[in-house]
Length: 163
Image 1 (cartoon, rainbow, N blue to C red):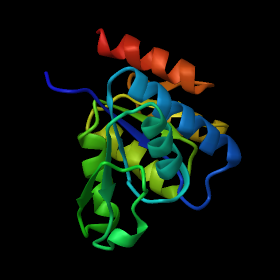
Image 2 (image 1 turned 90 degrees about the vertical axis):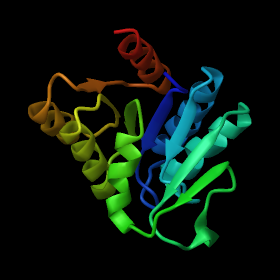
Image 3 (image 1 turned 180 degrees about the vertical axis):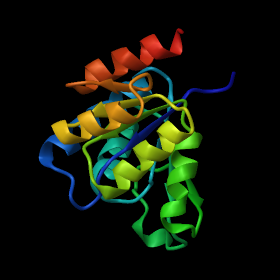
Image 4 (image 1 turned 90 degrees about the horizontal axis):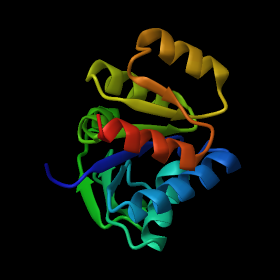
C-alpha cells in the first residue's frame, strides 16, 4: 500500500472558529503521522486551515480544486490538482482518501459525506451539528464515526487503519 491519504472536508467561507481550530490541528496531527492531507485546496475555511496546520508540521498537502482558477489556491497546498469540475470534484476528494474527516458541516461537506458513504468509505464527523450526526448515522451506522476533538478523530483513524 502506498501513502495513507487523509481527506479533510469542511465548510469554506461559512466555517466557524471552532471548525478552523479543529482543521488546523487535524492538519498538524495528520502530518505528524506521516500521512498525506487531501482537501478541496482553496484558500478558505477548513481547507485552508487544515493545509496550514499540515505545513506547520512539515506535511505533504494535496488540493483538489473545483475550477481552473489557480488564484484561490491555499498557499499551503503542495500539489494542486485542477479539475474544472465544480462540485463533481467532491467525488474525487472522498474516493481518493483512505478515511474522510468532516470538520464542520455545510452543504458541500454534506455532499462529500454522502458520496463517501455511497463509496463505502469510513467517515469521521467532527461537528457540533447533532442533526448531521443523526442523519448520517441513519444512512450508514457502520461507516460513520463521531469525534469530539481532532485528537479523538486521529485516534479513530488509527483504529480504522489497523482493521
